[in-house]
Image 1 (cartoon, rainbow, N blue to C red):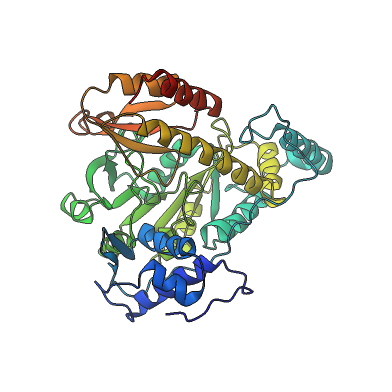
Image 2: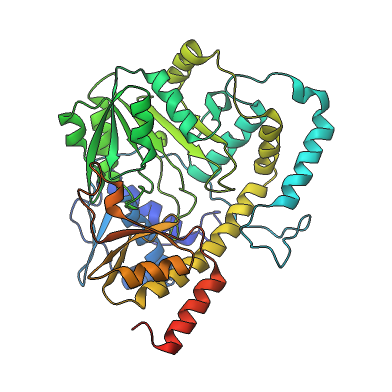
Length: 455
């Protein structure tokens, strides 16, 4: 283990501790079940705060390398050998913004109209009639390059820009992936899961299997048992359960992938930017050496739901197959919008927008969790990533549901996401706070406390 930290190396102190312990685990210097030094001991040895060590341990836990045992300590729980996770550069914190200011009356996370309008005008003036010409079938090169650079900075993997395909929303890309991989495949989706997926697969006439989850995510043995050849998963933050797939399960899925030449994984990374402790969990696409993981993401979650621009990243082999089978398709996203988004990303506005959005949602999240504490018999889980979490309600949930709706929270019973519907998940709720407002939450908490309406 480290005996000192380098404050001038360009990496945060907690990241240095995290990378050192992870390296010891992957190399075998720390073995399965071995106990790590306590946070206090590590902090004293490295002369840092306990919170710095806690952040490093939390990241190791989130990725599945370490587990915490109550009143006992931290133990190694991974022994699968080396994982090819590329070095990553941190997304920089929001720098001072001088060109464009957000009005006091505007929500910090609201759509950046001022910036977007200025970029649209500059695109129109500078590109002129060039905007009328056709673009490559995968999308405008400028946008694909911007996305490639962003993914390297934020998600830690490199994909050449020409292997990025732009689509008009994820549903559009789901349909094209079926055409790319073939209708003879057996598609496996998470159960419970995103309710649109089975409808899309059914309309395409393909066989779709609903695969159960355990506490680590989709179960590889069930993929094998049901003859699945394409696993459609969301490992960074599963919807609706909120599960973050640990490294052990990711390796098991990679082993399943290696068990057949016609097997594929579709990795949906839909809201990986919203993580409330540590850094985003590395992608399976970045771990993949087989070339059979497809990465998909969208700007609908990070900019606005009406921004119907999504993209997927393909391996070299799958891109050749894409060109052969689907290269005649024209990109459905207007070129004008693609160039505007490209500049929004490449000029740093996108990451500043994410940072502002995260700050606001962090405040809202804290208010929502305070609100949850006001109700007796409500147990919250998976609240450290994304814009939703789960809440298990003991007893009558009528008052709880009414309060959530009043505060702008979207609440759905977990049973609605199972196939067959209602088969499991009774008494457990998905609480989504993407549409909540700080003022309404603050007023409810204050008013309820003063009136003594909620214990």
